[in-house]
Image 1 (cartoon, rainbow, N blue to C red):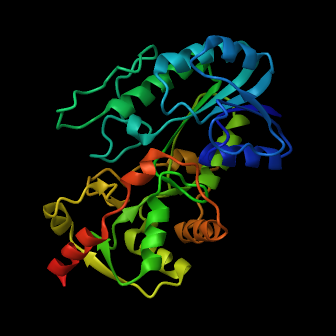
Image 2 (tube, rainbow, N blue to C red; image 1 turned 30 degrees about the vertical axis):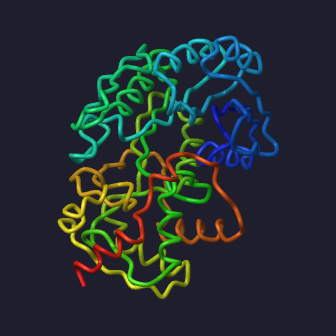
Length: 342
């Protein structure tokens, strides 16, 4: 099997490359080569996806049985479309990693693969859906861009040669966003730890390695495949997650469960200032049953937590990314809130 991985140096892309090589597959990666660490054993081709000449040069390395695209998160749909059009004669199947943000109802309502997708067109530019700086309503810009990229892939490979995967939150070794690493470092610091909301609230992070394996399985599938890719609803809870952080770090810290209304009144930013905390009804109500029926396996979250802590303890660092700085509450603000509930 010969596959092309768009990306391949970061987090999910790197896990896909490693998994493919472990299967004995031939792997070519395509990136700008400005960040990430190449995986030994893969052929690295460098170029810019916004340059058609670079994509044409990449196609000359084919043919490929499949392309797995993990690097289109910051590309306009029309750029994805132009690349897919060039690659189409040289690629058997296109596995596109999208996001649950592509749904119109996320994060406000439960979702399945039958839920409505946002209105991004396949040929949209990077300005489509962008909102003015003073906008205070929901921001669907990212979701519209990803929905448009999905349509771009389906325009060229929608004849039964495409898989569209919509993960939610991905955690695990190599995470560059900073959600799980922040919680691990906070657990390590100990003391009274502000635990957000309902301890029994279901959460659905998936391990990056499991999503990578599922993406590789999609390489071998036929027909159009569309799947949400999350842990099952109800199996994992916020309490279980935070207990795993305490256990993995050997922390003697104490969880102080703080009601949603207290956090909201204190102006705490959901999703970032307290990572993984979100009160929206659909944030953790994503039906991934089609993925499980198609062979997706989701390991226990406690295993992901323990492996990520071990990865950090070995001195590893993720690829630098600006989103890292968005996550985590300032200690003094946390202390002020804890004083209100003590």
